[in-house]
Image (cartoon, rainbow, N blue to C red; front, side):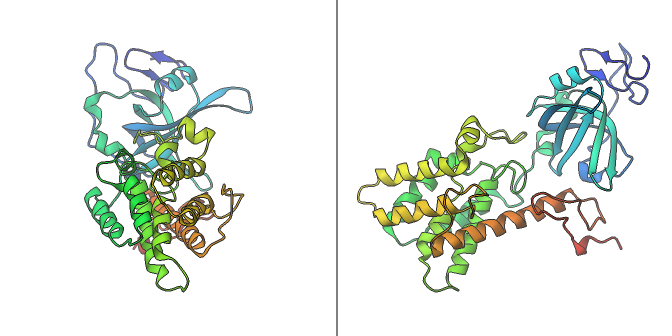
Length: 354
C-alpha cells in the first residue's frame, strides 16, 4: 500500500486516501458487501461503503490553489454532499452526473454545515452492488392514485374551451401527458423525483378548487385549469434522468415560465373559437405564478385566479420542502439544518427522541 496522499488506480477504481481506505489486492476476491445502508441510517463518524447515484458534480478550487471535487450523492432516502480532496482528475472523470459510483469514506455531521461524506475511494459501481430502486427517489403517492385523482378533477371542469385545452395536455394518449406524468417538479427543493410534477400540480389544483368555494368572485374552472397548467413548462425545462435531475438547454436558455407560456399559447391558438379573453386569463396565471419579478415572474398576479394559484403554489412548494427535509432526518432527530428552500431550519416535534 502506498503512502498517504498517493493515488492507486486500477480498472476497478482508485484510492484517494490509502491509509484509511481498505481495498483488495490485485488478484484477491472482491469483498462481500453488507446489506444496503441508506443515507438516513448513517450517524456522525460512520464508515461509508455503498453505491450512490451522482446527482451533481463540481470541480472547485481551495484557497491554497488546489482543486477538489464536490459531489451530491443520493439514494432513495435523500442526498448528501461528498468531497474528494485528492485524486481530483480521476474522481471527476468517474463521477458523471446520472452515473452510479461505489464510494468508501467517512460520514460526518457538522453543527453548521450539516452532513458530509469525505471520500476515501471511489469507482464505478458494479451491477451486483446496487438496485436502481434503492437509488431513485419517488413520490410517496402511487402513480395510479395520482392519475385517478387528476381524472376526477378534470371531470369537474365545465367550460368547454378549458376542457378542450386541458385535454391537449392531459389526454391519456397525448405526448404531453406521457411526459407530464413522469416529470419532476424541481431539481432539488420539492417533489424532485419521477411523478413529482403531477403530484405538485394536482395538489395545487385541489387546494385551489377547495379555496375557490371560500372566496367570492373566483372563476373556479379558470383557477383550477391555471393551477394544473402553471408548471407545464417544466416538462421541457428538466431532463428525464431520475438519477440526476437537471435543467435542459431549453430550461437554462428560456426558463420554465416562458416555455410554459409558449406551450399553452400554441395550443390555445390551435383550438378554433377559443375565447381570447379566457386564453389571456390562463396565460396570465402561468406568467405570474412565481408572484414577483424577483422570483422570475414576467408579471405579478393581477387577477383573483392568478393570486390564488400563486399562493397555493408557494404553499405547496414550501410544504413539499418539509417532506423532503423530514425524509433525510435520522431517527430521533427533530431539527434540520438551515434549509435554503425554507430560509430556516425545520422542526418536527413528533420526531423527538424519547
